[in-house]
Length: 294
Image (tube, rainbow, N blue to C red; front, side):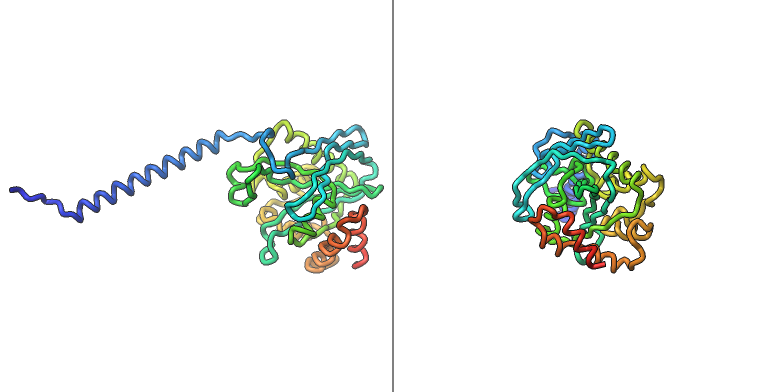
């Protein structure tokens, strides 16, 4: 009888190599398929959205008059418990006199991950906040990594400050900083109108959110740089939004007669937001309390 020259160990080795090769081929195929699916993905505006993102505001600008339709004005009892509400409001651009930069770090241990947005103040005590966000579908949770892969569309949430600031300060367990920005009324007006126009455009030409290139802070920076070219340099501290106030401070957009730590202490509004959460004059009250601390 002729004996086989192969040993059991040799058979196991070949089998192991075959399994490894098959796994590598399968993984490669999945990566290619995923890459193709990602490349072919197209943003949509007609998905089923979470309630916070279900309705997009619409702006009509006629001369110095802005009519905002479906401005978000939710009432909260917890971070994810609210009564939806929307308003139609009219603003006089000739009365636009302030712009504010809001920074909300996600962690007290590392400022990097954060949400930033802006708010515009008018002489008649009206304020309107504009927050660029990842538009989510039911069951989706925002994540910085998933936000890199066309997981979310982009939305400009336009709302009342008691909604956009108050909900975060009172229920989100976040530090909320409300900085007055130094700039001219002409530039405030240009930025406000440009942000409204971009919000309108997203309703018919949706875009994907991207954690690095099309997010809350990158859009604010793009608007500023469009109005004043190269005003805000791109860099790691604009990619990590929690440091965006440091960038604004270094450029003199935030009062830098104080140290940065002093400015952060002065313009943190959590306590005021808690105190005046149900006050009809929420926006004026939280600013009056900040001014009293100066």
